[in-house]
Image 1 (cartoon, rainbow, N blue to C red):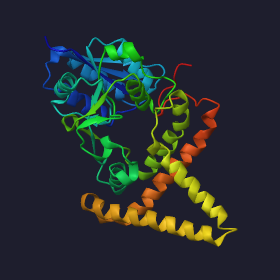
Image 2 (image 1 turned 90 degrees about the vertical axis):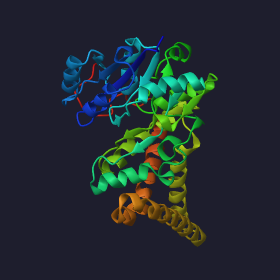
Image 3 (image 1 turned 90 degrees about the horizontal axis):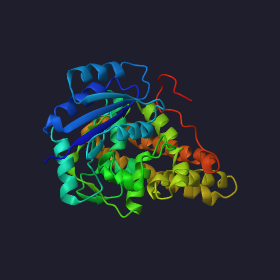
Length: 342
């Protein structure tokens, strides 16, 4: 007997990508009668819901659900509660999926015995514009995003986290659903609970997907600043949710600021600051020389400075997020759209 699958896609204002995403999920080698696609719409104000409804009318296994809270974890939980599959796959409206993706998810869960399986992202610029190529270069670089294996490697084996992933349905009975307090970092927190419960997470190149990040560098800095503000609160919810790499930019920015202030009183601090900045820029330049082959000479020229601004935005966001040591951040949606139910 073949395994039934439910693919859950929480969305909000994804009209640029959602049709290509769902079309790729409809073109799977997995038997159509064995899987359903639940697009959970978080009160989109663009054409996202209209596109999903059109596909729903043409395909019997596509269903559109409403997400009044308009956040990703709430959307996932709505999808899980309304799903029928023995395997739950968390998909993203910005990703495109190869035809054998569902087949490989089920196969990998069966063969590895893991509780969550996923694959690396192949980061593809949202367009051929300079800003889009710069964003892709940063997010695919170990210097940019640290030891995030799914972003920078095609590793095969057990890891701490994978983006989204495929789960056996019974897992959620054991460890609970997605944490709806976390508008961001909810996948990290869920994977932390899996590990704490003795579960295993497996990454395989067989589940590689194509990811399209934000289209502009300014958009990346804004997204990074907002996301990193959730790190401290995420650790309050679950200390295991965030790793050391998530805090490094904050330590780095703090060190720079401390040395800058100390320079006013101690010349040696200025020498340390200059040395640290020089080492950083040299590493950034070395990485840029590699990335220029893929993204062009124009990206090479600005990538060291772009790395700095990216890490500065990340670190400052984390430091600003310290205010959530004692309070909770608002659970408003990430993207603009229709008002949510209060």
